[in-house]
Figure 1 (tube, one colour):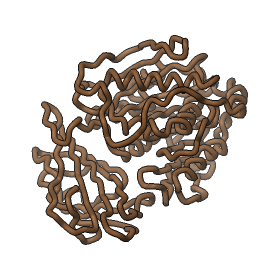
Figure 2 (figure 1 turned 30 degrees about the vertical axis):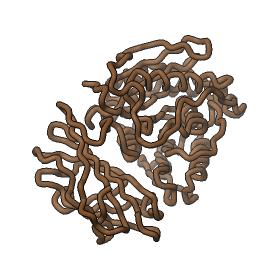
Figure 3 (figure 1 turned 90 degrees about the vertical axis):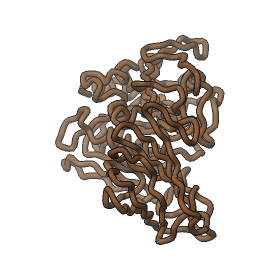
Figure 4 (figure 1 turned 90 degrees about the horizontal axis):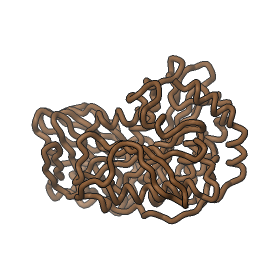
Length: 434
C-alpha cells in the first residue's frame, strides 16, 4: 500500500529536511481559543458545506480541500473535527479515499473507526502546495486558519475537539500546528514526522501522540523523539527514556508518559519498522495496522465527538442524559454524559477532586444498569464489563490535584436501558453529582 509514497518520500528527504532546518516562521491570524465546550456558529443551522472537493481563497491563492461529513449529519450535534494531512507527493484525495486500501484506510483508518462509533467526526483533507507542506511565510498555516473558520461557520463543531494528524511531511505540518495553534487544536497525531514546516511558538501544552519506526531511513526516529520531547516539557510530563522494540522483533511499544498536566497527555508509539504510517507487527503494512486503533483511542480519550448542543437532548437517533448522584461526600464530584443510539452508547465521566488534598491513585466504583456491557474504553481500566464495575487510573492520570478534573470514558452495548449509573464512589467515598 505504501511503497509508492515511501519512494516519493525518499526522493524528497533531503529537500524537506533542509526546510525543517531553515526553521520557516509561521504567521497568520488566530481563529479561536479552546475553552469550555461550545458549538460553532454553524450549530443549529442548515449546513453550508457538503462532502466532496472544494476550493477556498487563502493568502491570495486558491487552495483545495476534500470534506467528508459523517452519515446522517445533524446540525444540532457538536462534532469532532479531524484534519488529515498528506505526505510528500501525496494528495488530499489520497487521504480522503484511503488509496489502494480504500475506505478502510480513509484518514489513516480513523474514518472507519468513527463510523463504527456513532459517526461523531467531520473529516477534512487539505491540499498542500506542490504536494507538500513547505509553509513559506506561514502560508499553509494561514490556509488551515481560513479552513477552520469556514468549517466553523458552516458546520456544527465542538471547538474543544479539533484534531490534526498526518504522515511524514503531513506529520511535520501537524507538529507545526501543535507549536502554533495549541489554543485552537486539542491534540495532534504525528506519524513518522520531523520539524519540516516550522515551529512558531512551541511553548504551549497540547495533547500529543507520536508514532515512529526505529528503522526509519527517511526521517530517523531521533527526529521524532525531538518533536515528542518538546511536548513532554510543555505538558509537564515526567521525562523518561521511553522503551522501544528491538530490531527484528516485529512489535511495537506504546508509552503513556506520566506526570503530565491533566488533559495534556503525551503518547509515544515506537515500532520495529521503517517510514510508514501503517506498520503491521507480523510484517508489511496496510489498513490492518495497529496505528489506527491507537490513534483513535488517543483522540477519543480526550472526550467529545458527538455531544449535543444542550445538556439534555432527545433526537431520533441520540439521547444524552446526565447522572443524578446523591449529595455524597465533599471530597469528589462526578458527572456522566451518555450518548446513546440503537444498541450502543458512549459514557464520558468527569471526576473532580473537590477536597483539599491531592489524590494519588484512584479507583471509581459504579454499577451499570441491566443490559449494559462495556466493549471498549479510554483513560482507565474497567473490570468487569457489566454489573458493579471498578475503573482504575492509568499511568498518566493517577494524580488529581485539589480543584482539578480528569475525564475517562467507555463505549458499551445496551438492551434498551441507557441510563447512567445511579452513583459513583471514588476510593471508597460516594461522590456528589457534577
